[in-house]
Length: 468
Ligand SMILES: C[S@@+](CC[C@H](N)C(=O)[O-])C[C@H]1O[C@@H](n2cnc3c(N)ncnc32)[C@H](O)[C@@H]1O
Image 1 (cartoon, protein in one colour):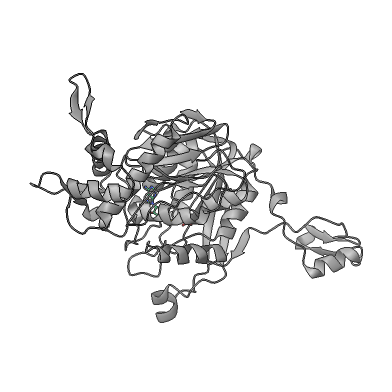
Image 2 (cartoon, rainbow, N blue to C red; image 1 turned 180 degrees about the vertical axis):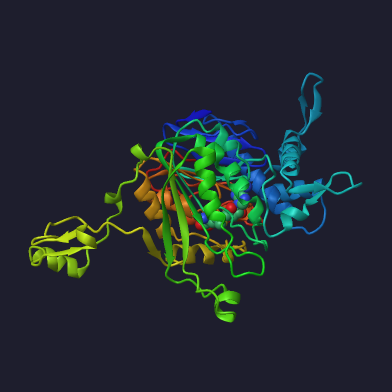
């Protein structure tokens, strides 16, 4: 593990990224990170970042094969390599054979792009490469063992990966895992599907290294659907019930609650069983399964999420509280004169959390992704729900992780609430689209270029003079 104190440029398998992490922030010792170039050579690394973006553009702009000669020309046009250094040959290695260093850098980058599945050689055509079919498809899944930094801010790091390696190598305690795992569904969504049979093993496998790294008193909050139905049946699959059992049995976690996210703007459904057969009610909620590894030390504090008192309650306080006496539930609950007369800072929320599905931030994300021609994520969490959970379950400065980050809602909520964050998403386009939500954020730097959409260029706040 590396502790990064300053501004570094990290060289990864198929890209270069700029990471600006505050003191003490752990950076993952990624198995596929070739190595840190270092703050001592930002200009050199920035050149390579340009080269990466320009190469993606050059291959992306052509449907067919691109010869190396054409590629060199395109790169020179974009200023990613200079013509003189392409032509100049210098002695290299012990044999002192003459080579163009610029061409070597381009070929090195080609190999990295090939390994990442972005480009492929045209069979039987020397020196010709093309974009792979996979890279051209709407969504680009990370290769199984590849972990790349998609973008970063002063507080967090978004990884393009499907692997656990980054979390296994993370050497600092995690205070909250907040994630919406892929739902158990029979018909695949754009980002794939996990069948009900695979569901429990899949989720437990993916979160195991995170659970092992939890600080005592940390929470696990899993946003899961309640609406997985058995085949041709109005009966539900009991997937989240099984998941709760597995979290306790396999990891020794204690269940704090199944919070209900009441979707105030849920569309009608399940159509077959509610609207057509009339055997079911319309669905209106999802669950947030909340667990901790140590209930006696849990970081949750409802004082961080108090809600404003109602008008009626404020009137009651102003009047000095209740004027009556009453007893309910066989005396378990009593009202006496003066009850509810104390001035308190706010109302303790119930465990039914009412939030609309869509919010201004989500709408802005979707608009921006469409403008860029990127696929829009189909199942984002409301930002307000993520913010509420993060504020309730962690303290400022804590580390929040999202193992299935999608459009980066958890990351955005952590950023807004002053928590550090680490988010992993397997589809490059979602990471790239999510990066748009961080434009203007302090220390923002992005590297991913997908489908002809280049990396977001950093926007630095004034006075942030550590960036180049
Ligand atoms: C339900 S969505 C999460 C949505 C997210 N909470 C948001 O607000 O946008 C689940 C995400 O998990 C991603 N995913 C599936 N398997 C993965 C894996 N093994 N590693 C990382 N991400 C994965 C999918 O691509 C999808 O974007």
